[in-house]
Image (tube, rainbow, N blue to C red; front, side, top):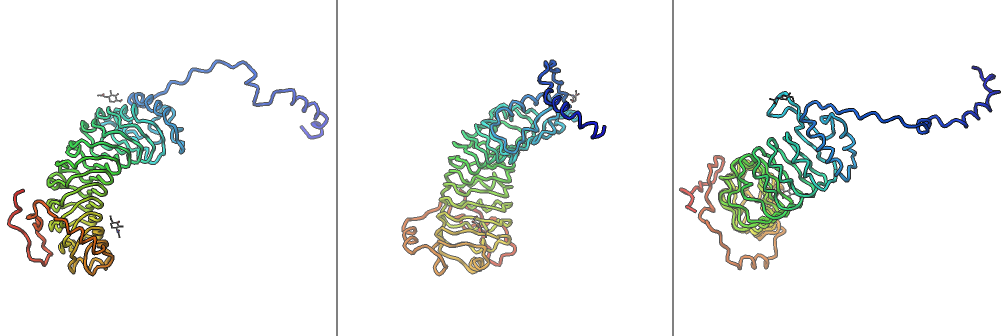
Length: 399
Ligand SMILES: *[C@@H]1O[C@H](CO)[C@@H](O)[C@H](O)[C@H]1NC(C)=O
Ligand SMILES: *[C@@H]1O[C@H](CO)[C@@H](O)[C@H](O)[C@H]1NC(C)=O
């Protein structure tokens, strides 16, 4: 058709256009055909069919999803949902199951994980840090046979510590730090046979440190920023012999450091800063041959800083500020210039930035006493590189 033929008909075409419904509309003007029945969802495995309604139900209680994660939670292919991962379950190598959930950083907001986390029968890893989930940990997670990593840190969980965790046979990694849990942690938690890592820092736990503080295999223990009180137990090395990182920071721990703390041979980070610990530093800390960061700042320690501790080969940060230390030998002094040691706000004559003399006088006017003081200079290890005379006692005095 050429333009010359079209032109005379222009008006007719226009009027036709206006008399007809707009092209997108016709369907809505006609009676609707009955909807086809929804296609049945075909799941790759019946185990996925089991968790499908659980996920969909959880989706309905999510009140905020700024990254639009849940938009991908549609259809039968659960293994492709964002945050969900499938694998063969331990009990059947040919089956396919929802094996892990990783919501880290998804910024989801939901009032509870009840009915979700505890209803995923094959789950092995559940990571949901940095969301805004709240409520308490569902008690029924104890029934999850394969769950070995649970990370719900940096959420808004509250209430008391879920005792149901104690019954879990497979849990090796528990991270509930940066939540609002309160009350006390059952002492048996520390002796759970499967736990390697226990991160409970930055909650409101308030209790005496249990005497039995480990199972002999915990590698990471962070109790920082709670309200733990009482002394650091003498059993620490027996129960936490494999510990590489221990954070007691910002609690209300008191008493003197037991020499046994020097038996934590694997410790790389030992942080007991900002507590109410007192006494002199036990010489045994010279046995922490792997230690890189040793923080005792902000306590009530006093006396001499043992030269053998300053001589530790791997030390990069020895924080002793805000205590009442009175003496620093030449090895320790040399660390000041290297920026390794911080002794500000103590009572060390001639060192810069010390406490006012009156503060020190007031502190030392009180009688100071540590139990087991005979073990204070005991060095429970052989220090091959030390030129110091051996300070070993024949045996530590019985407790
Ligand atoms: C293992 O899983 C497959 C796939 O779901 C299933 O067909 C089979 O019956 C299961 N085997 C056992 C022993 O349960
Ligand atoms: C050393 O450790 C203290 C306490 O943990 C910390 O405040 C300080 O920043 C650290 N210093 C260096 C140089 O890393």
